[in-house]
Image (tube, one colour):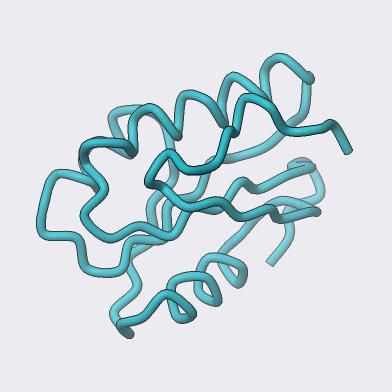
Length: 104
């Protein structure tokens, strides 16, 4: 599950979030860069039929596809696939301010 070289995984469960996903990924990436934290943005896609997966990949996020439907399934699969020593979660609908996270 963990990769010692990555300190943090920012996990976002996702289902058809093409309108907000790019903003969320950029905020999360900017936080990692600003705080000089080695980390990844991981999108746990739960069957999106829009352009969410493409948007995530174009913006440098890692994407896993979760076949078992449901928010809990997306979270659980994302945690299992995380490469960071620590994992934090936020929804991909821009309801979390990823640019305002406190450093570890």
